[in-house]
Amino acid sequence: MLRILILLSLSSAAFANCVSEVALRGLYPEIEPFETGHLPVSPTHSLYYEISGKPDGIPVLFVHGGPGGQTRPKHRRFFDPEVYKIVLIDQRGCGKSQPAGSIEDNNTTRLVEDFETLRRHLAIEQWGMVFGGSAGATFALVYAQRNRSRVRSLVVGLILLGDQQDIASIFGDRVTAYFPEAYQTFIDSIPAAYRNRPYEGLERMFRSGDPALIEQAARATTAYEGGLITNSPIDPQTMELTPGEISAARISVHYQFNGMFLRENEVLEEAPRLQGMPITIFNGRLDLLTPPINALRLREAIPHAELKIIEGTSHFLNEKMIDAVIRTTDKYAALFTEEPKATNQPLPHQKE
Image (tube, rainbow, N blue to C red):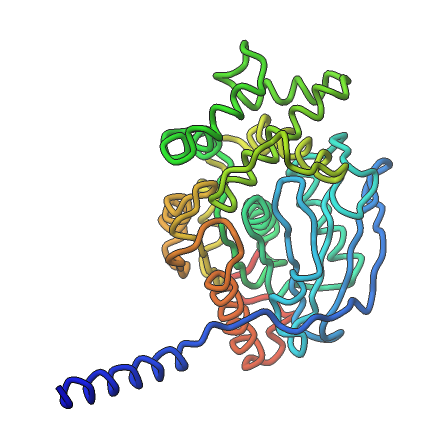
């Protein structure tokens, strides 16, 4: 018996040492931006941007998701502020950008052009990193593909490819098997004629001009997608709904209904443009909104990319996901700070 107790004690100590060695990394401390502004990008749209971290550091562009989401203070904390010059921007119609919720002249081509407008406005020769998650990953990939020499590295997670297979799967068997009641509530919110084409029905509701229909569409969209993000169904009738969430839902449906304004399979077909670029792809193992098969499909199109499937995580930014994000951005920071002029000088293979 004593021998067993000794062995258990030793095993417990070894386990404790193991846990301490692989302690999860947390977000960097809270910081405030040292510059904020609104950048006019069209006669209609003026985009909010902010800069924090090290003024002469490695410039990183954070691309938020949604579509229709916004930047938040925690996004600054994904990056070491002693190393990175952290640039956040609210996309057209999103967050603090004006006009809020506008879908006029709002599409993927315009968004990636806005990232270039911002780069030139800030006199940044080349982004050391472009970082995007979910729909932000889609926009980050398209931006890098269309502006190859302006992006040194790419970190994308919670992969939304934006093709018909990807968008249709949001209403497919993988969701209905786990959340049949949430799916049925969502479908029941859509006019019967469009229940086999949910995004078309939601698009018509948002364009109806009827406040009741618009709120119904926003509740259905926000509750359904929110439930997939947290892996916990949300009741659309009892949830609180802010004007910002209505705007976000309108923009999300606008993009999904239009296939993310990309030709079919564009993200994968244009992937060879990224050959040689340092790239990390990460995804949650239990993600129902953007399942790991999307990350695998992307990795197959970019064989040299690093792929991280985070066990026990969904689309939600939990401790394990944060740990993976921080370790990745730290790894790139170490890589770039070891190389003279790595921040602003294009690599030999980086040609537009």
